[in-house]
Image (tube, rainbow, N blue to C red; front, top):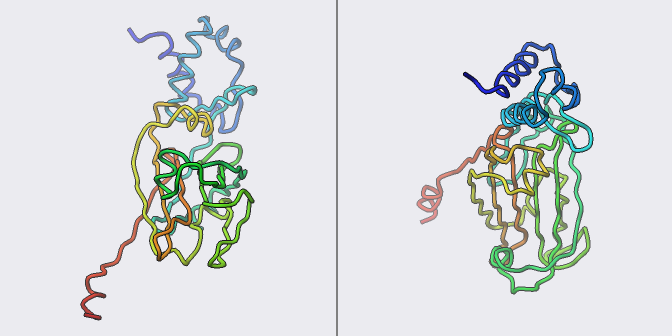
Amino acid sequence: MPARHHDIADDLRRQITTGRIKPGERLPSESGLADRYTVSTATLRSALALLQGEGLVEKIHGKGNYVRHRPRKITYVGGWGTLDPWTAAETALRVTDQATAIEAHGHLAALLRLPNGSPLTEYLSVSYEGDSPHSLARIYVPRGPEPTEVLDNGASYVRAEASFAVLSALSAEVRETVSARLPTPDEASALRINPGLAVLAITRVAADTAGHVLEAALLVFPGDRVEAIFTTHHVLNERLKHG
């Protein structure tokens, strides 16, 4: 016999999928739902956890449980580090960001090819679809604690809210490492997703012709909200033409 919390989840799921409870609508309080189904609050929360894991319900701290709007996917264009303007426009994303002066240590120092203790600016950006977090970016730029910085080559840093763009068209190399993994606790909290939902994690490093890293970006997208497209061209033919 199915556990009671599965029965409750089935009933709420049916109301959501049939439109009886609409996207964006706040569910009754957990204590109210527990009384309605004559179960303990712990059992009711187990039922809600199933729906949260399926992406049907979102719990907003201090506000309650809400029926999620069906997530629309956006396209990440590999190599350029941008969000496709058509899909980004459809989702009406807004981006919040903050700049913080930090120092490079460990993995971050190695990623940026800098000595430990080198000064960096960290840009923490979160994109939102309505009130729901859609993606997370941590972008690191060597030198200078200022939110906007001009490099020796005269290229100005483009803020993260401009669509997670790479630092400059002058970048000679953009290297991206893509993986699917579970979110860290901080990522799950910032994106308000179930810790069991896989994310698409992209580490992007842009370097100049001398091999100096211009920026390193750590991008995280919930797996159900993004598609990544990478387009390549054959350099062999170009080499043969000039060989």
